[in-house]
Length: 104
Image: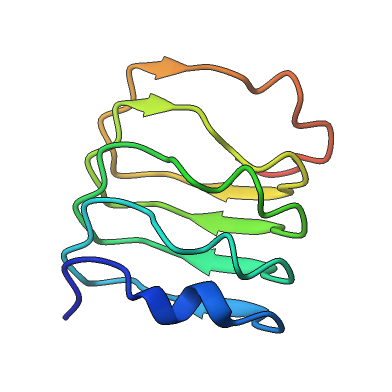
Protein backbone atom coordinates (compact mmCIF):
# COMPACT_ATOMS: atom_id res chain seq x y z
CA UNK A 1 0.00 0.00 0.00
CA UNK A 2 1.12 3.51 -0.79
CA UNK A 3 1.07 6.31 1.74
CA UNK A 4 2.10 8.93 -0.81
CA UNK A 5 2.11 9.04 -4.56
CA UNK A 6 5.36 8.00 -6.17
CA UNK A 7 7.37 10.50 -8.26
CA UNK A 8 7.42 7.92 -11.07
CA UNK A 9 3.93 9.10 -12.08
CA UNK A 10 5.41 12.45 -13.09
CA UNK A 11 7.13 10.72 -16.02
CA UNK A 12 4.20 8.75 -17.50
CA UNK A 13 3.51 10.84 -20.57
CA UNK A 14 1.27 8.26 -22.29
CA UNK A 15 -0.53 6.86 -19.24
CA UNK A 16 -4.31 6.74 -19.86
CA UNK A 17 -5.70 5.03 -16.76
CA UNK A 18 -4.42 4.94 -13.20
CA UNK A 19 -5.93 3.05 -10.27
CA UNK A 20 -4.57 4.07 -6.88
CA UNK A 21 -7.58 2.91 -4.90
CA UNK A 22 -7.35 1.21 -1.52
CA UNK A 23 -4.15 2.83 -0.30
CA UNK A 24 -3.43 5.28 2.47
CA UNK A 25 -3.01 8.35 0.27
CA UNK A 26 -3.58 11.66 2.05
CA UNK A 27 -2.67 13.96 -0.86
CA UNK A 28 -2.73 13.98 -4.66
CA UNK A 29 0.75 14.73 -6.00
CA UNK A 30 3.08 14.03 -8.93
CA UNK A 31 0.42 13.69 -11.63
CA UNK A 32 1.21 16.81 -13.67
CA UNK A 33 3.51 14.66 -15.84
CA UNK A 34 0.57 12.53 -17.02
CA UNK A 35 -1.06 14.83 -19.59
CA UNK A 36 -2.89 11.98 -21.39
CA UNK A 37 -4.57 10.57 -18.27
CA UNK A 38 -8.26 9.84 -18.96
CA UNK A 39 -9.35 7.82 -15.91
CA UNK A 40 -8.15 8.22 -12.33
CA UNK A 41 -9.36 6.10 -9.43
CA UNK A 42 -8.44 7.42 -5.99
CA UNK A 43 -11.26 5.73 -4.08
CA UNK A 44 -10.87 4.26 -0.60
CA UNK A 45 -7.96 6.42 0.50
CA UNK A 46 -7.63 9.09 3.17
CA UNK A 47 -7.93 12.18 0.97
CA UNK A 48 -9.46 15.25 2.55
CA UNK A 49 -9.04 17.55 -0.49
CA UNK A 50 -8.91 17.37 -4.27
CA UNK A 51 -5.81 19.23 -5.40
CA UNK A 52 -3.23 18.98 -8.15
CA UNK A 53 -5.62 17.87 -10.89
CA UNK A 54 -6.48 21.08 -12.76
CA UNK A 55 -3.57 20.54 -15.19
CA UNK A 56 -5.00 17.16 -16.28
CA UNK A 57 -6.93 18.57 -19.21
CA UNK A 58 -7.71 15.15 -20.76
CA UNK A 59 -9.10 13.61 -17.55
CA UNK A 60 -12.66 12.39 -18.13
CA UNK A 61 -13.43 10.13 -15.14
CA UNK A 62 -12.42 10.81 -11.56
CA UNK A 63 -13.32 8.48 -8.70
CA UNK A 64 -12.70 9.92 -5.24
CA UNK A 65 -15.37 7.89 -3.45
CA UNK A 66 -14.92 6.63 0.11
CA UNK A 67 -12.44 9.29 1.24
CA UNK A 68 -12.72 12.10 3.78
CA UNK A 69 -13.42 14.96 1.37
CA UNK A 70 -15.51 17.79 2.83
CA UNK A 71 -15.20 20.28 -0.02
CA UNK A 72 -15.59 19.53 -3.74
CA UNK A 73 -13.29 21.91 -5.59
CA UNK A 74 -10.17 21.88 -7.76
CA UNK A 75 -11.65 19.63 -10.42
CA UNK A 76 -10.15 19.32 -13.92
CA UNK A 77 -12.11 21.37 -16.49
CA UNK A 78 -12.78 18.52 -18.96
CA UNK A 79 -14.16 16.04 -16.47
CA UNK A 80 -17.30 14.20 -17.62
CA UNK A 81 -17.85 11.77 -14.74
CA UNK A 82 -17.21 12.44 -11.05
CA UNK A 83 -17.76 9.66 -8.52
CA UNK A 84 -17.64 11.06 -5.00
CA UNK A 85 -20.02 9.06 -2.80
CA UNK A 86 -19.03 8.05 0.72
CA UNK A 87 -17.37 11.35 1.61
CA UNK A 88 -18.32 14.07 4.07
CA UNK A 89 -19.06 16.74 1.47
CA UNK A 90 -20.31 19.99 2.98
CA UNK A 91 -19.39 22.46 0.22
CA UNK A 92 -19.35 22.33 -3.58
CA UNK A 93 -17.41 25.08 -5.38
CA UNK A 94 -16.20 25.81 -8.90
CA UNK A 95 -18.63 23.54 -10.72
CA UNK A 96 -19.76 26.30 -13.09
CA UNK A 97 -16.76 25.82 -15.37
CA UNK A 98 -17.35 22.09 -15.78
CA UNK A 99 -19.36 22.26 -18.99
CA UNK A 100 -18.62 18.64 -19.96
CA UNK A 101 -19.78 17.13 -16.65
CA UNK A 102 -22.45 14.52 -17.41
CA UNK A 103 -22.50 12.39 -14.28
CA UNK A 104 -22.09 13.35 -10.65
